[in-house]
Image (cartoon, rainbow, N blue to C red; front, top):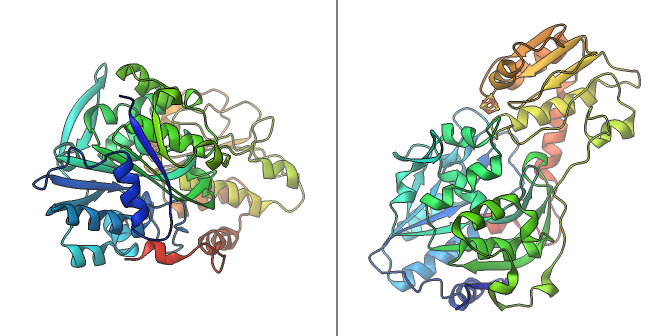
Length: 431
Ligand code: SF4
């Protein structure tokens, strides 16, 4: 029998999720006594400029629908587990839970909220002597329900079921996946070898274009994709936003290790017609041809400063810092060439010749350029990740007349960009 994947239209009530689960027989192996863990995608939380939730977080609406279905089935031991990235110190998973209505779910249904960043871990070796430390709560649950969002990603093209499991890793392992020598997609594709979701449901009420590093643009898609087969769910979900499975490296790594097919012919898709539900969403961000900054630099005529394009070694902790640097450099541009400064991030970029100063954002890139003779004068921003104020000071020290209020204005705009827009109802993210 072919692995079954359901593709269902979300119709504004809980019947849609029920249909998606029934079509793929998602509860076939569920027992009433199981310790069930739901792993949504609550990637990070921001207090000052709350991230616009559409296409970023799993909708609280569908998580609540799932809890009701599990309760109706007779399950009593239900937890929700996530390990959100901390963009601001002390603001992590529990704040995301509070901000997205999960406290209400806790009260209403007696579910347990777990911060997987704090969970005890199990160690799994995945490459030579490299290992992943994975939250025991996820590894040892009897029935793990992986609940990602339908989104694209600036480093991995798509971020679906396989990628969502990265939230089960201890912080050090999350960072390790963004390895300087190994491919990010190779590393995280192993998590599903050790944490095996019994069911993957992709929340496609919203789909996100140019997601993750660039904040992205959400579209209403009204789809739910579900399967007991994680790769099958990811392949169908990816196709609905225009991606063929063979073009996604982490699908390929996982499929090869598990001897699974990357052809949709080898999966039974039930429910909606897949071809009629494809809306391509872009994942990548244009950069200047000489790799000196985002495409907008060319448009505005920004010269002098160079900000090479992020690579896959840039981990989630440093990515807001890289974004901050882009915006601050733009704020310093007054129509004249900027000072010859190169700004590097991640773990493997190498300083190029011809720059009077090289700003090194974070401990990793400082280390990677320790012996780089192209550097005339290094401006090091220490930290893992560095703090925003130190980045601002470093840019100023390098002769850039940056205006922090431009950054704050941009963040506010990002936070409020869907306010009042039809189809973008924040009630989806409340219990
Ligand atoms: S310095 Fe930045 S890139 Fe390096 S591990 Fe820390 S957060 Fe990640």
